[in-house]
Image (cartoon, rainbow, N blue to C red; front, side, top):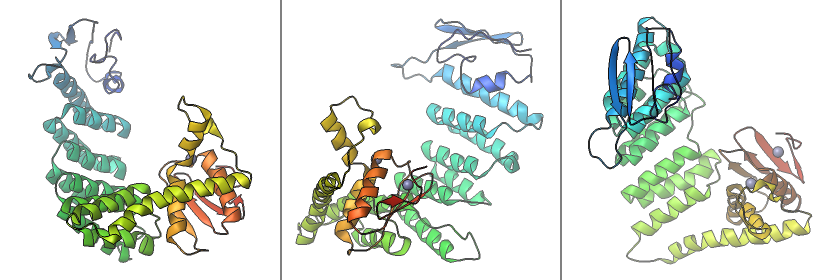
Length: 372
Ligand code: ZN
Ligand code: ZN
């Protein structure tokens, strides 16, 4: 029988979001009692363990937190002994907790567990394992998980490339990217896997760290040329930083032109907004959550990434070219309306893929018929 009181604050076992699902599982005769005090007496069968809150200013190990994670892991492993794999969401939470606690041994225990029940978990859990190891600062262990994965998706590759790039393994990140491109071209394996906007951002950042402007340039160009991805402001910023870093000695005309591209995009966007207003666009400031005045709200909407990407695309491509924009989040209603109006007078097709669907904007209409 399990008993607990939910009086304690963040550190308590009973109110902890990770432990909650475990402690309702009748594995062992556990009695939790927690109090809102500095010390939490924890009754574990007939033993009593005292836990202390971690002292923020102290250099000593946060004993309380480690005990929390150990207990959660023991519970997880006890479920394993009963051949009951924990729900993926619980394993994810535990990984997050492990990252917060910066405990590599705990990470290894989760890894062992997931490997043991590997058939119960899908690719996303393995991707999270990779991410966990990177966040714990161990890129070799992250690489081991990646190697062991039978099935990989683009997120697996992205997590790996990003993690390598952020952990000082830029050359390896670039090599892995090359491998991804190769596998994408090879239809017999992993078909449908090809780099996306996130992959390019990581690989551009790797080039930025390495100061390899030649490679950076070729990736930046390949993005739209070979994969139809319109560079976002982040890609563009990374690319400009790379150029700036590597050409410090001479600020060439070319650089100046690149820098002015950014201001040109903003200028273009301002013109587009004026034209759109003439064509009937009224900013719907309901999509801005900040507590600011109406004019500032309008400005905030104006600089949504998809609009900047469109403005940039319009100045960099020849008239009539279809612009494709990929967005990780859902497109907001105001941008949707803005692009519809834009497609009326720009005489181009705009294709925006958000996290839900494709929006094909043409002649003032969107393919989603405003339902999305
Ligand atoms: Zn928007
Ligand atoms: Zn739409």
